[in-house]
Length: 517
Ligand SMILES: Nc1nc2c(c(=O)[nH]1)N[C@@H](CN(C=O)c1ccc(C(=O)N[C@@H](CCC(=O)O)C(=O)O)cc1)CN2
Image: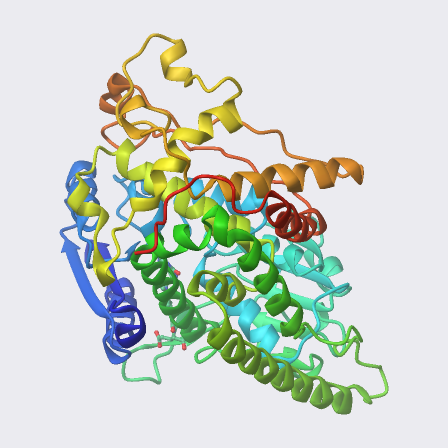
């Protein structure tokens, strides 16, 4: 990152209170960050810190251009409202995807640039083990916003049939016995027993529980949610310790690197979407995505037969998983030579759908700066690229494209808009590079409609009145922006293609600025 993008990813970890386990996880995260050359920032606040104290700390990191990712170690002391605090982390620095805007996008749109680290770690584990997810029955035990819920979404995204089992599910073992993949995230030590698991199933243990053990000098040991007897029936059981925990930290670093990249290259990414470049970019991006083709061959490695033949099959699937990972890495390398960083990042994030996620992430991120009244310097100029430089076009255009007549709702209500999207002060009358994105959205919608697929209606981007901003200064009531995107992957893919051809057809006649940083 340093040599290629002139950026060193910076990760800020905020901890409130003195829980020993939290302190250990925080120092593990910092140690890993430093060992891979990231800048690491740490803020430890006393257990007595007020909501405002923590908000100020978050704001400090929000404004620091050296810091690209911010995480609040959970749990926080009971007098604090974790949701309000997580919502105060800037959207583009929310390295764990817990800000309700990012979490909402993940739910409504199925994909954002980032996802919560533990579920991402589980998905990466399944990929590298060669476990086929598509078409399988996955049962997630647990419903937390940190693990259970996003886990279900990612498994669903990977085309599993997903059951979420929670405390009030009668007969949970009835679900797990039918599952091909079980993800246990209950916080109940060794809850899942051999009798709960189908022979040959894959069991991922997310639990990290401390149980008393007088035979150990420390007086306790760490166990998962899965009992050791499950290993007798399952084909794979992830270990605790040494399984999902380290994967969580690895995914945190990956998210942070992605976010550093995005923040440092925003101008370039916007530039890459300049109308004049969009056709060529769309064509090459599509070609690179097709080239990847690493998703596996579609057979079913985890359905292991009762007579034990499954082991060979598992071995085979592991090999195929390794082959897929290698193919993906090679394709990325090749793609890296021939395409822009923006496209590369899109590919790193796995799917053509993410072209939309990526761009809207930046779009909202940059408007968030203005919502917060952040000064221009906090937008950052790392890597010689002025972050946010390319967003004027978005700001000016979105109300027209999404809200109808181009009038901002705040204006309609007679309020005074503070740095809002659509505010007069933001537009210069020039065409913006993000028009290409809007076009893509519109093309995708048209394509989806033609095919009779569902399209999420467009709603406005976040607009905030000055007095509302003050009212919500404690960070608890911020508006969560809701732009829109087509819901179907095929429509999105079609849009990429259509955008390529329609951009070519339009030729280079359209005005626009070059936002290359
Ligand atoms: N903001 C967050 N808070 C918390 C998260 C989280 O993902 N984000 N998850 C957990 C704690 N956690 C990370 O923060 C975490 C826990 C455990 C491990 C880990 O690697 N554990 C080791 C065992 C360590 C030991 O011996 O105690 C392992 O499983 O091998 C990593 C991260 C709650 N809070």
